[in-house]
Length: 222
Image (cartoon, rainbow, N blue to C red; front, side, top):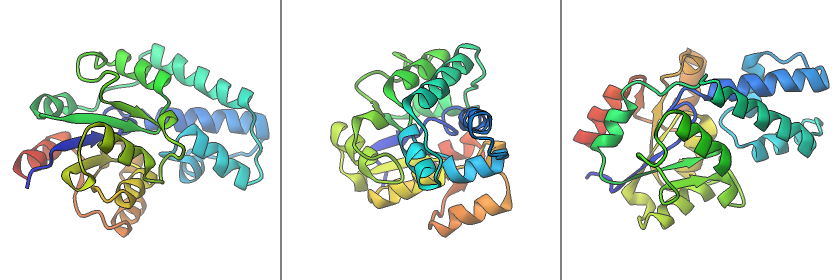
């Protein structure tokens, strides 16, 4: 049975951008707190989360951050966006063109996500205020199901009639908690290792792809 609504994550799925934000957090954390974290450590703790969830995780580790810290992170991210460091995932636009109904549900905040979509020329072409849902619209971000359930409701669909395309462990967990079928897209090189693949499989994901052409075939033949 074909799904009525395809729900896209953004970072690591529509664009290979998750690694940019993780690198920025790594650099600023090491500068401010002298942690000595490498990219893998930073990603293990913070990957796929909204900054709100990242802040909670850091607090749990005894690393107390303030609003100025997160404003610095956001400003650095915006700088990277304006410098066109973010690249659209190959063939993702082909899929979007083939879909009847779709939206984004991302752990990014609204203002930043608009800038990301503008930078890849997707804003007002494929996405606008009617089909963009961001973490600042709900009380709890991924891995909680709130954002995906919110997107389903706003788009007028039941969770069982939707499908999520995700890359992160927290995003996959959120989709599963929402009762939505999820496929894992691991096209970014940061995910292409046996350890990460094993973690994805442990979450019960059966359909795992590395190329958007395979995702398109799956969606059109589901």
